Image (tube, rainbow, N blue to C red):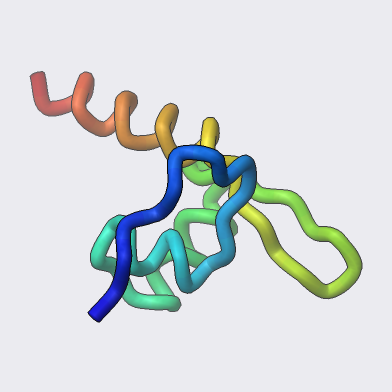
Length: 65
């Protein structure tokens, strides 16, 4: 069982985004590669800013409205 993400997270890991969006690892990396979901790399660690995830979701909601 996964727990919800605390609102204090500034950056999320790929597995956290996978859980939040209920998507596969491949799909999350596909969104990153296509630049639909901006991310940063720190060393070998990939992080998705929480604000980028919010913006991505808002954009997708506007597309269907």
